[in-house]
Length: 439
Image (cartoon, rainbow, N blue to C red; front, top):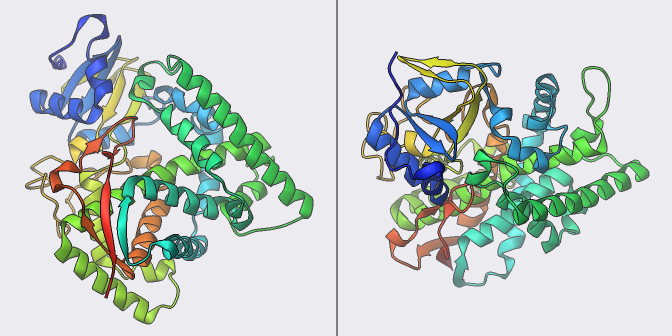
């Protein structure tokens, strides 16, 4: 067996902690460039092993939880979702919760969600006028929170939505920091704000559940799925579990939708010829479909390919992490028990072997032969449960937007770049685009 190469640049007891926290994407890119497929680094005493190749990524995603465990690595999510949900639930219970989430994402429900999202966009652009400028990241983050909440919680809750809900949810996202991978309890004041925001969100969601039950109402949204669901033993979800499932779904779909929508808009503005072709495709779609449905959204391959290339260059999740519960062998290496094992979509999607000229945006880029080369949503049994909903959101948003407006860059193309204030990759601020109504 070979010893695992160590990334250079460790400083004192903190090791690589400060450089990693400053920008995980850049640090992991440097680590791979220096050491290749397998390397290790030190997060203030926590050995972390980075694996970069389709074969290595497949090994991680296919490993059973008894070997590589996601819950052990993501304990910072337990206060966010709640102690009985996903990473805070026993494995068998979590598997049943995943089935419940999947029930709310059946094809018939996704068709309804597409129309809801399109309606939200149409209401959003009513006050835009003929032309103007937008901070597109801020705008899309707020929009996708509204669309996600509408599909998740229903029309009545959406119509009472205020900035408070968005602000509370943002406090939860701020707690998901690179530093939390090392020590979930070391967030200080961020933890206190997270816990207060989570408690207030629970109040708002529980009050809505109680009102719906008191009136005997039944709705076609995700919340109703949770309210009607039972575990294998016949037990219904508790109010606390329903709140956790709501927040879990929001995390699974919202940050992907918001960031990917923002970058899709930027890349459309960077590539006007491709934007024109996509717009023509959307015009043809609407010529035969008065309302968007999931089936109609399947008929826009140019937009689909464009979004996939956006996800390749700008994957929302830079790191996907597991904890080795036992010694884990990969190739000629043994990763000791207690180590974190990390794969990185950001690094993996820039491998020249699989993505020639990887820094070039190419919407016509063919899919790689290996399904574990392109991993914006992870892979295996823990592939992101919200990925289909997130892609549906982005497609529905741009079908509605590009019918009416075209976009241009306000600043120099190179000024729009990826940053990582949390574990979620996002565009730099301000992210200004100019819009103009189509003639």
